[in-house]
Image 1 (cartoon, rainbow, N blue to C red):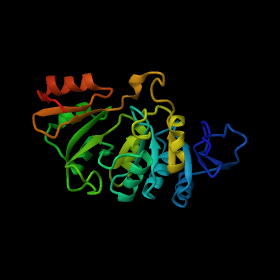
Image 2 (tube, rainbow, N blue to C red):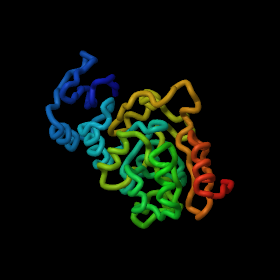
Image 3 (spheres, rainbow, N blue to C red):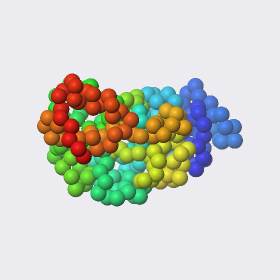
Image 4 (tube, rainbow, N blue to C red):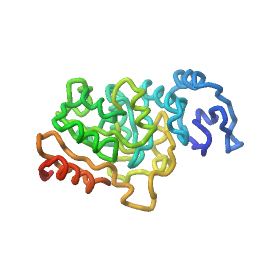
Length: 270
């Protein structure tokens, strides 16, 4: 698969498709113009082989609904977040969840986080024992909050634990995508397990053939900086009055400051 640079919206079987007002910069690629959002939605719903899409205008409806269509067909979609590139599927789709583990070459006992669009959605899928203001202080942002899962969550998602990590990235595309889906997204980093996190779509090009869609939001942070590849800070808030840092990540200092100084939570060693 070839990735076509901006401003191409997505690539299907070697042919570039664009939204109104955009043009193909690679003249070697045949062009078909999509005149409306409905055209893009119809095309996506009848094909499972769309491979790449540019999200320079990430909040635009055509891009979002193309991704929704891929997810609803059980596909895996690579997306930009506020930390590193991720791979998402519908968390309530057991087959898609298994596909993520296969893609990552990941141990089946290593949990996946869920991704939501807004803080209020957390209460449907988790039992929350911290103030809502605490959630609002940390989310959206580069933090994964580990909470007790509710019965609403797919039992095939992390069946070995009563907990689940929750992400609400501070990134417009993935938040709009999560809002448009019928349930939570399962989200993990776009890399093979044990390998470095990725900051551009080209860095996980080996995974493209196994993905339904690759959303290119451009470089995330400084690709030369190891600190930009740390991923989200993961903190367990499942025990009342306490917190446990599971992964320091990129927002450790600010997260601990909020938990300790503003809310008086007591740290525990992981």
